[in-house]
Image (cartoon, rainbow, N blue to C red; front, side, top):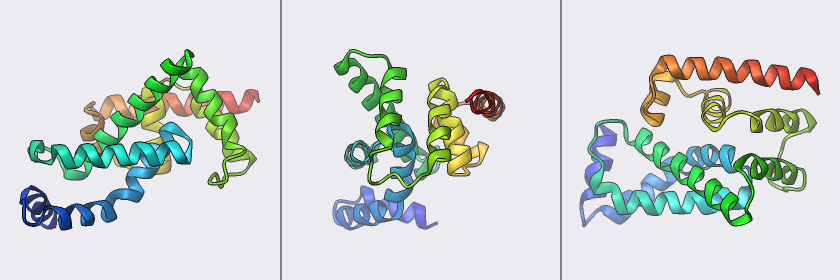
Length: 179
């Protein structure tokens, strides 16, 4: 019920600014971590988060309510992060995998990275996965998103998501055992 009120307020010219500030405070942290798990860098995650909220603000009138508002925003955040990665890799004239590898190497010197050597190894293992498996693994492992919600966000069946997660786990285990 509160989500319906928030959506109506976001679409109302009189209440839009206040409602948007409320939306940002409610979702910025969760969206930040979704983006950060994809782009790895704190500064890049902040930039992508800002772009995500701009896109949400500009397109809120297009939100039909077919899914939860959160799922819709998550999809935008995920797409913005993937677009960022693709653009950055193209600018640097390297593959997405090479860009991921660079991002993992830079985590060691990132003052906002709070992980230890084990966490760094896990990030290296995740970076070896195909993009879809990375998304599914990060959403399930780090954010404990239910497959039903993930299905709305990624527009994929729950069965396919479960299979992707299972494959991701097997590949991560194999990577870590070989290190």
